[in-house]
Length: 165
Image (cartoon, rainbow, N blue to C red; front, side, top):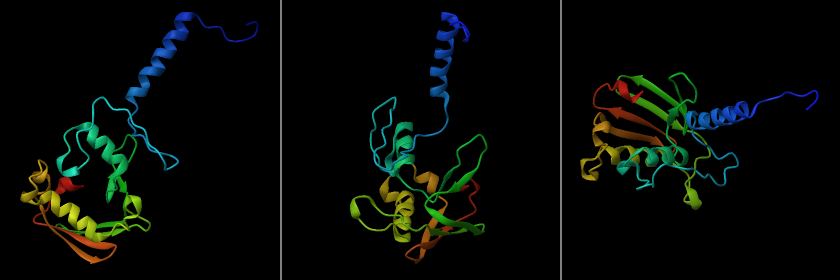
């Protein structure tokens, strides 16, 4: 290379190695850009995809990609959340959180729209002792979910529960 940059073999290999290592340190989760197929590599097999019975981090990683929550963690270096399945989420007092689902949420394979009744079922199922979920304790503050209409409801807590946010 007469006028170009020159690198030693050691510099090239060192740069390639450093670049390869940074991929594993990248904190953001993969998202399917075209909305068709999402392929994810994990360090272990998935045990199940039922949020009430997830076993380890691989299930959490996959569930964050395929399930819609009312809100989720905002990508980046700051601790923050952003709306996901909700178009509105407001804590009106210490024990009541109003939500409105965003337009266009549907179940896969044509099973219809996602509704406030689905939110009620999902949340109350996690808290129900009959479900025997290992995560029931995380939902112990939930009293119930009131459904106002097809797209809105109120999450009612037994007591203030700051870890919810």
